[in-house]
Length: 125
Length: 364
Image 1: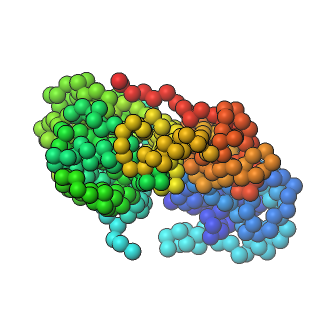
Image 2 (image 1 turned 45 degrees about the horizontal axis):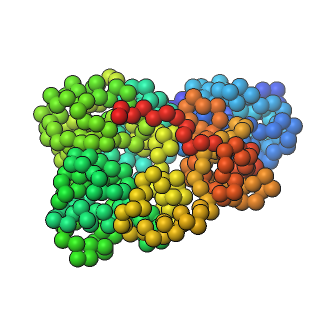
C-alpha cells in the first residue's frame, strides 16, 4: 500500500499536505481501495469554516456513501472540481487528487496527525 | 450467532482474490475486480456467478401439481414439462413469503428454487400448508451447487462444453444434459436482463465447471455487488427491497405473474386489493441533479410530506444520473411527476419514470 513521505495522516485515512500555510487534503490509497469504485464525490462548500473532524463531504462507491471528515480546522478556499466529473480519479491516484484546500486556523492541529511511518504502522495493525 | 456457511466455490473465490462478505448467513464474494467492470462485463460479454446459496426444494407425489398450485400465484396447470416459471408465494394477507422459480419435471415432480435468505422460512411455510396433500417436500439445498453464466456471449461459450444443441433450450425451459462430460440441469434463466443459463449440479460438478468456465479469458467472475446492480437495472425485484411480507405483488407491479383465476393462498386479499384499487405502487425514479438515491431513503412530495421509500437505487455505469425503484403513494405515481428524495437531510428533486431502465436482451 502506497504511503508518501512528508504528508500528515489521520486515523480516518486522509492525508494533509501543507503548502504556504494552506492544507491540501485528500484520501489515502488505503481508503480509496477500501471504498472500491468511487462513483460520486460531494465536495465541501468554498468559503465555509469547518472544525476538525467535521463532515466536509461525501464519497460514494457503488455500494455505499461514506462521510469525509476534515482532519484540520479552517476555511475551505478551493475544491477540486475535476472530481465532480471524474470521481474515479480518487481510485486512480488518490495522492495526486486532493479534495479541498483549507486555510488552517490552528497550525498546531497538525501535531495530532501521524507521519508517514506512523500511518504505515497504523494501517498494518 | 450461527457459523457462516460456505458454498463449494468458497475456495475458488479466495483464489480469485474476491472481497468476501456475510450475506444471509453465507460467506459470499461481493466483488472480484470491481462492481462497475463486472456489471459491464455481463452487459457486453460473459459473467459467471456463484449462486449455490440459493435454496432447492423438491415437491414430489401424486398431488404435486395441486400442492404447488396452492402455494404460488402462477397457473401451474399451464406449465409444460421442462418449463420454468417465475412466481411468488403469498401469505393470506397478500404479502409475499418469497419469490421463486418453479421447474416442472412432471405433474408429480417440481423443483422450487428460492432465495437463500428465505430457505428455512419457505420450507416451514410449505410444511405448514401441506395439509392433506399427498406430496413429499424435500429441502435439498445443501446438496446442490448452482452457477449462472450470463451475457450476450454466454451461449457461444457454453456450447463449446456440450454436445447438446443449446439453442433447443428456449427462454425459461430446462434440460438435464452433460456439460464437460458431467451431469447437470441447465435452464435458460437468470437475474441480469441478459441471455444466459443457470446450471445446477452436485458440489463436485459445480466446482469442476466453475474452474473450466473461469479459465476462459472472456469470462469475468461476478460478485453479489454487480448481481444487485444488474438485476436492478433490469428492474427485477429483490426480496426484502421491492417485495416483502408487507408488499403485495400488485403493489410491486408484478400483477402479470398473478393469475387470479387460479386458487392460491392469498388470492382473496389480492382480489380485494385489485377491486379497491392500489394505494401505493412501485415506480422508477430519476434524480434531476447529481447525487445517489439509495435503498431506504425517503421520498417526499414537493411540500416535503413523506410519500414513500426508495427500495433500490444506484448510480450505474455509463449513466449521468442516479435511478431508483421506489414504492410511493399512488397519487404521485404517474409518469413525470416531480418528487423529492431525502439524501442526508437534503431534498433532491427527482421525477417519476418508467421502471423499464433498459431493454432486456433475452433470446425468446
